[in-house]
Image 1 (spheres, rainbow, N blue to C red):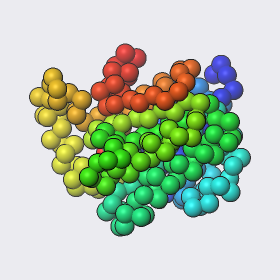
Image 2: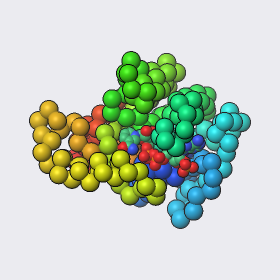
Image 3: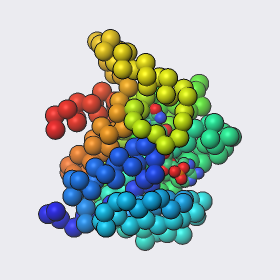
Image 4: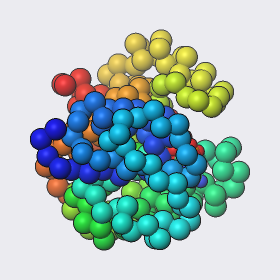
Length: 224
Ligand SMILES: NC(=O)c1ccc[n+]([C@@H]2O[C@H](COP(=O)([O-])OP(=O)(O)OC[C@H]3O[C@@H](n4cnc5c(N)ncnc54)[C@H](OP(=O)(O)O)[C@@H]3O)[C@@H](O)[C@H]2O)c1
């Protein structure tokens, strides 16, 4: 390690979040990686990581955790898990926006967030609408470097069973081979690649708002 950077990861127990932690440790870019979680996760990570169990409704009560170089947000839920639109919006909109505000107040250099392909405030689909809304609000916060990752369907080993995603992931092996030309941007993408792209971006000195569609994420990591 050649610098003294620190990171904070929200959503570390999830599919992308857990890949991200592994990637950040391997790349040895941070002297400390703080994880904020709602319930303790098995800490099989290196001593570089420190986990903090917090009440996400009270993120404001932990401003010191946001005094880091880079903040990564991999939070998300599904309507099925959240049960109501309000509960979904809390995880996919309110928590990330609060985290970004705290990151900005804490002097973070970069805020990196996983959104989704199709994010659009004007979408008639609730999921895409919330993703669009969170992106739009984050853009108003004047973060010195806001980095939005918009993957398509995620591939990877999930702890929980999601039938729809499982079936789509099975089909994607074949589909990805025939999704060429204008269909290429819609190919499913492995969570490891999204995590790697986030780590690569965090190591760059790019400022401003940067949006990474799924195909660009693929290209970023294939060059490495
Ligand atoms: N699935 C896809 O195909 C897909 C495609 C494109 C974009 N995305 C987006 O990519 C992002 C990451 O997806 P993923 O599949 O890696 O997510 P995931 O595996 O479902 O993980 C979500 C993370 O958010 C945390 N979380 C959920 N509800 C919470 C709550 N109420 N309070 C605090 N933490 C909470 C989870 O913590 P716990 O472990 O404590 O639940 C977990 O760490 C999401 O924003 C998702 O919408 C997903």
